[in-house]
Image (cartoon, rainbow, N blue to C red; front, side, top):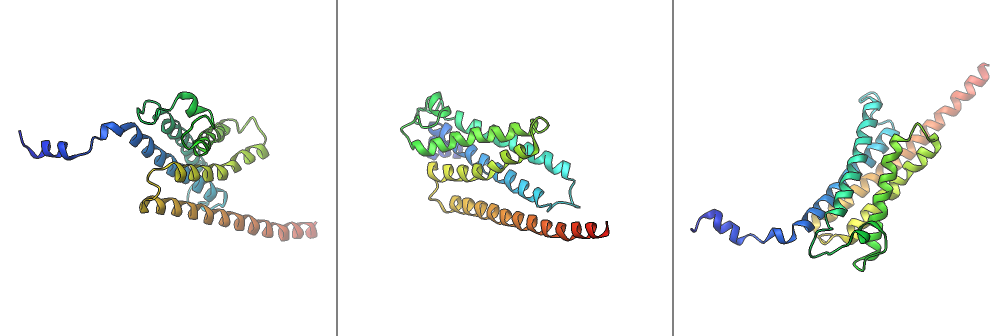
Length: 205
């Protein structure tokens, strides 16, 4: 029976043949953009951008949720490649760095990124058990995590040469860079204001 639906099914490529690869690639994009959102939100919170607009506890909870969501999507992104009949990765190759012959370094960066994400996510629940300095140090890893995720996506992605993909990577990287500089300037400004205030308090005493 020659119907439009039948014609469409015949002319469409056999998506099922590469289903796991498509799912892996799309989940990788989702994980990357969730990570970008988490990093951007963290920088905005530490720069006090939302003060007076949104409650800091609420923003912090959103930041924590995004971190956990990133970890979940990264895990799915890796494990969904296990049943892929074309990639043929073993569980060891997906969980242990430098074990695969296919883009060994890029794969290793992705695996290390996954474990770094797990460390950062777990630190939210260990905040009361570790020092504030250690907690901050762990979360400074987020910058390296973002750069590593970007490198993994660029080097591993089969569609990196496409314009929209390049634009998305460039836009997200520049946004994080801008927010980082803004965070540094905000910290310096707060420190500069604190010095005269401390001097006035000392003089008044």
